[in-house]
Image (cartoon, rainbow, N blue to C red; front, side, top):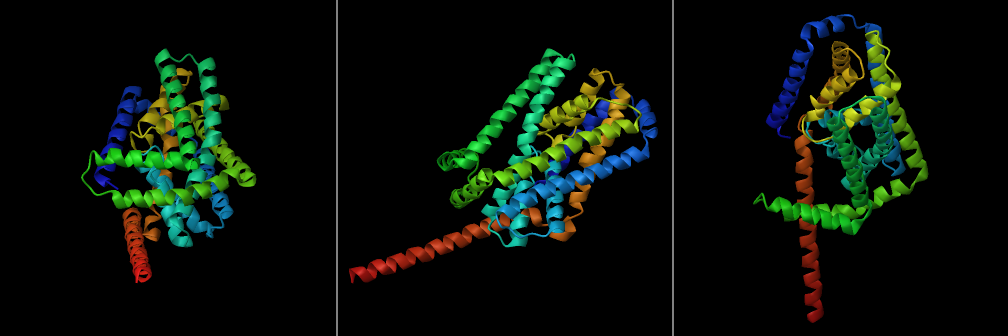
Length: 366
């Protein structure tokens, strides 16, 4: 992980947020924060912890269906670390997935391609209800709030892009020939901008495709797993909306669940664009803007957004980083190291196979 780049982008997001606070009015926001009811803030924190438990349970259902043995507490810690990395890297909420797969592989003794299939399956099962809810949220906002043409067009564009990307990911996960062509195309493009020898990495990636897709196809075809995982994901998304509602109650503001759900889902969708870490600045800006357009005082919407993001983003990030002493601070580097070691082992095995084949051919000729 490039820590300097992460720090720079995170700082940029914080600066953007600070500028928004400056224009709204720091004094009014501070007064609003002082009136926040601690009881509702505590309830919101508890809801967030329940959401984290549900996310872990969903991943556990997927892992169990592939006969992967795991312990609940370590799996919860892996989920936290994955979320923290998602929050701290500009990767469209996907930077922590390889780390989750690596840790599950390491602690369960399961091949990486199988554990990575559980992570991708978990991600897809989580995305299905989100996509459906985001479409409903978009329709709700368009017909209930007078958004400008630019904002409406931008939101629709982001939603269309998201649906297309989701379709592409699903297709690449289940169609082996298309996946192989896509991987080769990606490596061709990378070779244009680097002189590094990528042949071993490309070979390893292509060899992982088949086993990964077999596991993922099984998950998609397993109706029980599909239904249970999607049901848990729906519960998690609904609780996220309730958490935001409770935060507004802390300020004595009763906002409709429809508006909260719409703003939360749309801002999350925008935050998936891989620009700033965890959408810092972008998600906050969308939430403050749309709530203000809907008639909520800007200082209240800003204060509520700050508390909400403190719970859902910063608290989760710190909880995830707190697991690093358990897993080891070098876990991010170990992912790439393990991949290179795996490549060397495969090359060694391939060399042995070639030598054995040559000996057999020599014996036949003699």
